[in-house]
Image 1 (cartoon, rainbow, N blue to C red):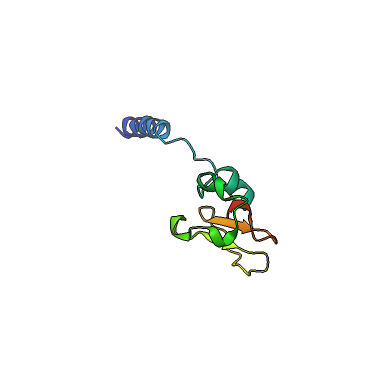
Image 2: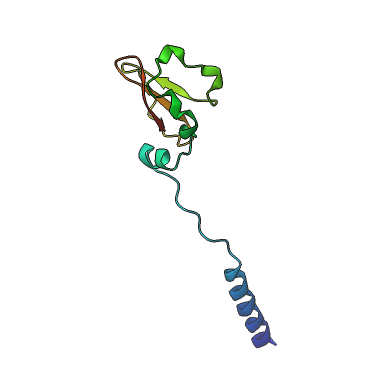
Length: 99
């Protein structure tokens, strides 16, 4: 009886192992990976590149988006889903990154 129970448990465990979902790709660990994966939706705002920062309609940006100027201090926390609009020394948007 114990042998039959053990055999059933082993068979059940083998079936359960096959039903597991495939492992997920690892989450981005830095801004380059997050931007490449477009986790913050930066591609939707690609038209902002070259636009003067004072002409950006901030109400059209996703929640948490930041417009970063050259001398601005920013937090060092990494959030791959946060859109960062990088403004150059000329006052125009130079790039978009996720961090």
